[in-house]
Length: 560
Image (cartoon, rainbow, N blue to C red):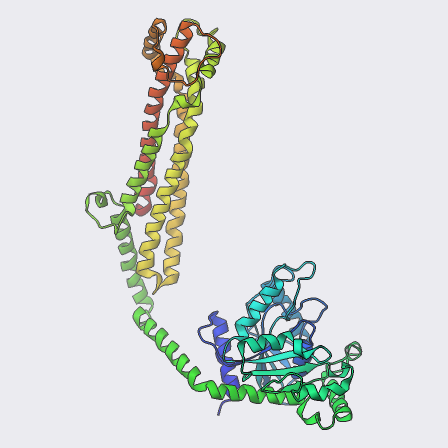
């Protein structure tokens, strides 16, 4: 019979490869404060120093570590899910964990919820799967985000609150076990203690060490699944490169010498066997529920695949595309066609041609609200006339007219360009909607590719349309004088000697000094001419926007 632990891990790997957490599976999470000895415990279980070490926060994302017993003739090696098929030596594993962690947490001293999956094969391990979680902290250190403690706690809680998760709560033996943060968190999510095992690290550093038996027997803090003590590798062992296998022997001798009656139920070897049995029992206990969830998810996605239809061979794909693309174009044409404005095609609401027509109407209403004379006060206009009177003493000043008119044109530029953007956005929306309804579920790659092509074309046409609108506005600025014409100038000149009623003065404000009658008449005539000509230009620019939008966007997009 296949090892249930191996089967569960294979499912975990498969889910990791597709990037989906569709179901939760029985697992074992290692929980503890920073520098509580988590890494030492894990490396003792592994039998090799494969985990990064340092004074600051080293574990910054969950490490899913699967220990797999292999043939005694094989040298230990590891394989990462993100590097399938590549074997890593124990020394290479540490560097790869550091590199991958850096990739997942681009900013220093931050944490990531993305898991790193590692299978470690060795003849010296017991089959089991563990998740090494970032160490708990109470306060942020310099350089760390202010909310680092909350971020780590949220990440840890995501794992340990799962009913299928066994909690390995690690505490330091020479700290007050009553105030253990790992046990406190475990108590919140596992109040009856049915899935929590406590581990006391650095037992040889206790003072006095005579208190240890009471702690391990649960006389200080009761832990239902038990408390296991371990002696970590000392700094001296690490400096002298003492092997973990040798450290295990040193630990066993320490237990035999100091607490022979507790030796058989403590230490890394006992912990490894106990964890294996706990995880195996947990899997078997929850196997019926896990099978049910897996079957339910399989049926769900099998039914979804059936809805998509059978896989198409090459010739069938060609036929499908030959039918799908013309159908997309026809539907695109129908929604954007002028026929939809008169009931020739259903637009399912204000979309397509109806929406574009509404956008153009809004632009016309915006232009209608503009008044060129609102730009100036009467004093400003009289000042302009004083400056140009030397050049045109006896006739209406076309120089003054051009000077006053050109800034008004800029009122039209932004709304005209925004109108082009709005029309382009609506056409893009129509494209996405059609593709989403027709292709996205069954052929997401084809839908994305077609959408990319059409949206790129629309963006190109929109840029060209805006260029033409800008050009039209620039032309209006440059030909203002010639468009007035000699007849218009003559008629306006005749008006200069006629008193202009004050009520017809289009400019606001009162002059700062009493002007000549001719100057007031000149200002009044200029204002009326400015208003009339500005409205005429508004109509021309609106017509330009409409024509350009139709030719380059409304029409050209679906023809292309």
